[in-house]
Length: 261
Image (cartoon, rainbow, N blue to C red):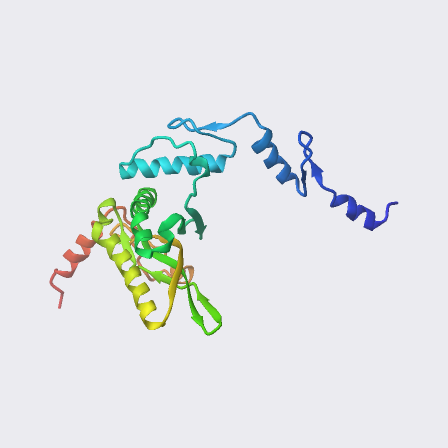
């Protein structure tokens, strides 16, 4: 019988790729490596003929085409498309809450206002796409900036966030120029106030711009909320379930009837 220490050592031995000899600690990693590096099957975009080894990269690329089509932009191919920075996408609560992060790059990252203007169209396209996907959202923008100031021989740094006004968009027409520009203006105003309140703060660079979104479904006339079990079991409350908005007319009509004496 083999000692336990030897068994543990054998279980932790790396798994090697039979083609290139690369080692992996888990079988899933080896399977992903084979699909990406050695598989001849590739997913190709029909719009621009770019090929992808991984399905997640392919789906992300196709979403960009949908953004461009909604915004009326061009869908011409860029040979470096796969290597371009995509907005980071984080979801929670089964997709109810979602964020998209645009990292600041190039010369735009040294001027907050220039950076915000450069991201205007991309932000608008993503919000439009999410309205089409969900039917209605609440959203706001936030900008993260790295700042510094000198105190004697030391350099103090800070990375404050500047938030725009929360907006509600139920349809494409709700994303008006005024609402988006108002959010950008509020962020920039907060940035200026921060510099005034804290003396000698200078901008090192803009870190990123984040779109915070949450699914929004306001109650309508056809909405139905089931009663809690404790109240339902009493059989003392009428909770009408209808599929139209006519119940408001019934209630309004009943309220205008003369009361019996």
